Image (cartoon, rainbow, N blue to C red; front, side, top):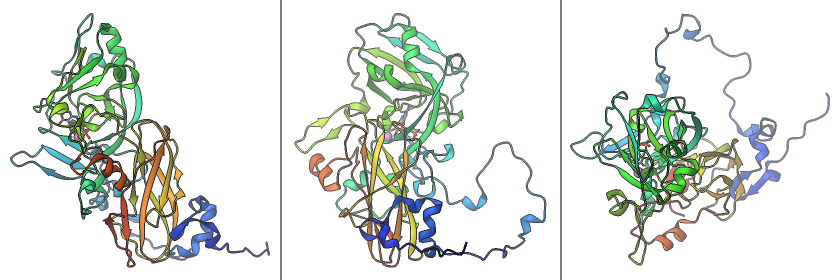
Length: 424
Ligand SMILES: Nc1nc2c(c(=O)[nH]1)N[C@H]1C(S)=C(S)[C@@H](COP(=O)(O)O)O[C@H]1N2
Ligand SMILES: [Mo]
């Protein structure tokens, strides 16, 4: 059109220190301003004819698998000696995008392996302070009205390495990978409890799993009535055995240990049952020596998944900083990103839909100049709670804490583009 396009100067789009750019750089139209910084692989008209364009492709298969070129995208795990299935397998957060975790990559924490449950033999008993005890099979449960909820599951021990004095030399998977998010579909627990008839004396439930760990936890009856689900499906298909097949309890926003897998019994009680896993474990030891029991929701937290260790920066220029934010108290309302170790912050774009108790993907545009950087994210949830600094959390929790680490985490970027876990 004869009119000269003026190249906007990137400097006018800075929103915070060390190269953080305005959100318009995440939109196609805005990228034009930064495109000089993006490497072009080929000029138009120079595409090759590849071998797979000239022969018929592979046949169908009953259950699909990822591309063989994605073989690195797997869970990593450590198991206790003498047993292959006791311990945890971590989600490769740094190799995924969006907010949903594929079922084969959902993290797994199991205290005594994965039971091989025949659904026709499995039963769920609802008893205790009810008018009529009820027994369900997966089949009879499937005849109730169902609903879906997208919810995260995070182990109470996730990110626990960040309580240590020195930064552990691990990647996002190793540090934060006890975290996943799925669309869970099943029957609302309130429907079943109403059918059983709740004795007014009942204030708590006990939930027990059918695995050999004897996992059982107490939860407030109010939570069971509010938004809890007996989940039968995970991202559209039946639960994976490792995630609770044929049914698990979903208490959205509560620490992972409460999401009892292989659920076989719910008992209504007046008081919490004081099971092993809520007395000897899953309590928060405070600096004065007192332990907090029944700390259920996980507090707001966020992590940058890219760039992160293993995904080093190859050249200077434009990058999208992206990560996950969540809160056990509701929706994420804001995520801020810093590239200078927390001296200045710019607001990230939140990917819709932003749902309560679900992972929320955030994105921030960044122009890496080639200098050192410390990347951080901090989330504020809809209650106004803002993710604390590591120093603030450790002052509050003391040095002996192991669970519920939710403070700001830092990735250091060195001049040669290497990304590593650091404390800022
Ligand atoms: N029955 C039973 N339920 C269980 C566990 C278990 O070992 N047995 N592990 C708990 C813990 S500690 C966590 S963090 C979550 C993990 O859920 P996932 O394996 O589906 O990710 O399940 C919880 N539910
Ligand atoms: Mo856990």
